[in-house]
Length: 489
Image 1 (cartoon, rainbow, N blue to C red):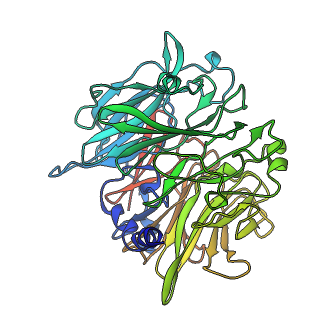
Image 2 (image 1 turned 45 degrees about the vertical axis):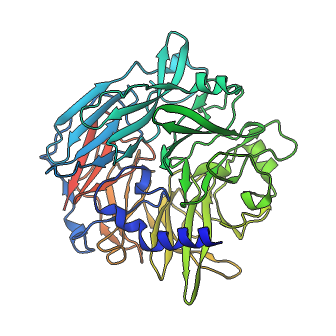
Image 3 (image 1 turned 120 degrees about the vertical axis):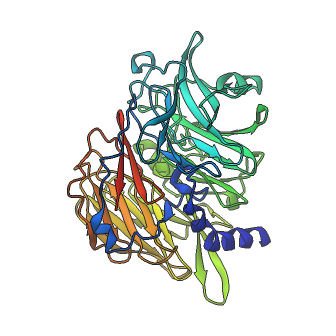
């Protein structure tokens, strides 16, 4: 209990503060909250947001991964790091957009060389992760080799993009040496990588279309020198881990969500929120997993619970320790809230709330203070909001139905939201891109849903679904095919 309490207090007190400078992982935190502190970006100042035309990037390749930000100690400018499906990696000057360095890794894989999928070519899809102390970028690149497609994990120097000694690590070969069957041709890597406790974690699902025999897989790597330390996989075929954030942590445990399994007549790790710990030992204790009672129906209808990563949240309770929860959203349109200390096993959620009339696939974001816990997500309609929208939920510490809708606002598109504040509490704004819709940047008052920035004049081209904003040093950055856009206020 002491570890959980320490992690919860750390979440309430320190997590927003890391937003002040480097952005080293998907959604700016191992908690995957998407929370950023941006001094000066008040509700009033939001109306002045505009495209920064002085930022001119020149990149090659389609981009699905969120950009990251790194500024070395003593440097006047930072770099915006982007990785593409062409297996090219760029470090762009944060003000001009000029390439500080660029590197092209080995060739990515054409879709025609894969048994299924929907990304062409398929290279770096999941968001990389930065070790800011070592100055190293880690990423997974699906790569064309003389042995066929292989997932290769690279470590690149942030000084010049050079590949560090001993890398890349061939995931398929490393797992085969551990007696695990893994085919890079049918295993997709769409989720953000995670550094936690000195270890690197990478998760895998299947390619679009669920072809072949694969398993939801987590690997734990030592980074110096690169070495596979542990792995976990679903017992049944399928159960892919493919949400944008992929794997989240709370300083003690790790959390993943899994999708539909294939051919399972008894529950075997699919359609679930799973708790893992370093070492990745498999547990069937109900404290370590939650799956709904209709998991088999979800399997049969391909309505993955794992539409989004599981977010650890800590809800303040006056005079008492915080309520430790985890929330996830599924392709079945439900929001699932569970007790982080006891996930509850089959049917053990605190609440299953219909949140959308269609699949929820974009990563949620959290506005967390000592008096409120609110979760924003993008969806295409619900009983409360029968139109494509951004929805904000209130999450209470107790009650028969602790999750409720705070507001919803129309949105034409499918980007993943972030939340900005000026001091971790004041001027909360939900920002989201209308990806594959109007392709504009939008801002909403996080407390009321009122429009604070309408997106006028910010239309972008070729922004892929699930596009996620990077906020760094009073700028926003959005990656699109062959281009990165910057915004200023």
